Image (cartoon, rainbow, N blue to C red; front, side, top):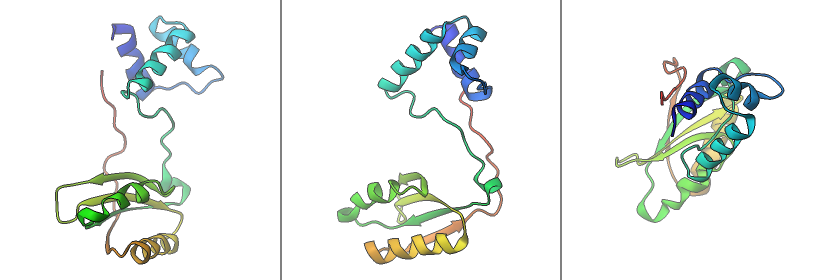
Length: 146
């Protein structure tokens, strides 16, 4: 990865332009063409280095609530982690070496919807889910300096 590409990755994380041709604007800032920017990002995606490129919405400002959830999945039910992780309300999901070995973040428009989803998961999969609702958010954004 050359200096221009590193600068591009830093810019994308901090100052993504909101204009009709954002990749052209980014390229101009680092000395690359729009095509070079798109080609570079496509290569990173194909290699699995770039997982996602998109907006990070402030769900709280839209009236949504966030709840960290955890459960104990027995070895024979670890496949449930993938099923739960695919739910549209789940933003992050992790298996851990702990008695509560599956953790996920649930984002819902209301406490009622949160309770409904958790009750459905518990009944459907025969698991007990511990809830850790957000009280105060400390991590605002993650930027990985390249």
